[in-house]
Length: 80
Image (tube, rainbow, N blue to C red):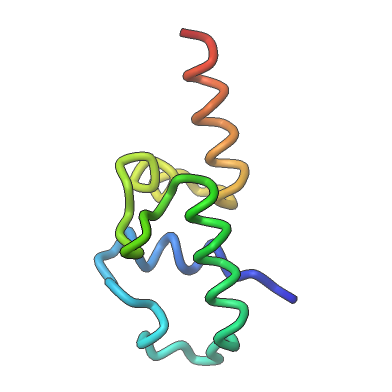
């Protein structure tokens, strides 16, 4: 199953509240969207209301897969 975290985090960063209602040219299936939101929640990028957290805003600014962006941001905090 392809988990579309990259488009979701960018859509959230652009202010799309619920990407499930976004008009994708080729929409992902609902199970993939749910799995992506679960992964973003586990990374601390979105809260239970699907809103970006401060960490999620930082993740969305980086041109990386959210998992790698999260790791990069966490590694910078580990040096403190």
